[in-house]
Amino acid sequence: MEKKLITFLGNGNMALSIAHGLKDNYEIEVVGRDTKKLNIFEEKLGVKIKKSLFNDFDVTQKTVLLCVKPVNVESVGSLLQGEAQLFISVLAGTSLKKLQTHFQAQGFVRSMPNLAASVSRSMTTLCGDENYKVESIEILNAIGSTQWLGSEKEIDIATALAGSGPAYLALMAEALADGAVKQGLKRDDAMNIMKGLFGGFGELIQTTHPALLKDGVMSPGGTTAAGYDALEKNNVRYGCMSAVEAAYKKALEL
Image (cartoon, rainbow, N blue to C red; front, side, top):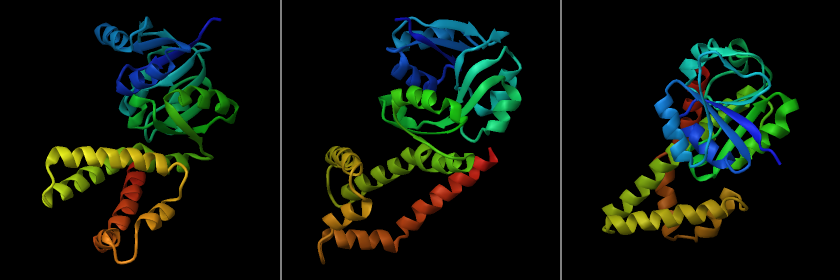
């Protein structure tokens, strides 16, 4: 059975991560500005790909994954020819209206993968043309899990949560390990324990509400209650909520 072709506009890290998830079931085509970088992309992907440059590239009836930088949307759009079947964008803060202004396609979908796409564990949110909902979800499921949302406002909020979230969790992970080192634990031991903590928690949170996980650990007058009290006194909860708000507002500015 012949594999369906997926065309990537852009050859950066996100494009490579998604291509890794798709390469077994799709034929990969990558369009970029530099032949040398396209060759490096192919080498890293480990399979033969179709390679093209942007100049006058024809997207007619193609399924396209737009993976360029948001600032390059206008310039890339001016180089393309034809009308694609579907444009799936992974660009933060780039509206459907802007995509429709600079590209020609029968359908447009916005998506927001996160850093975990590189290990096929992305939490990817999508919104856009309902006629292409099933196809878009099928494609992005190759790099993890997906959630279709009803509006662009919701995907901008989700970008602040899932898209930026790995950075917030990385800060928490580093800080918790630093706290253990401050109390006398060796750095290597602290880092290994932190990794185990996050690995196990990632599994638990899939099936158990956060409040129930917290209650299951916090015994009356115990160590967890003391630590939790310190987090509340230092406004960690409010800080996390404020981080999502700030990232959402920034997404609206982009």
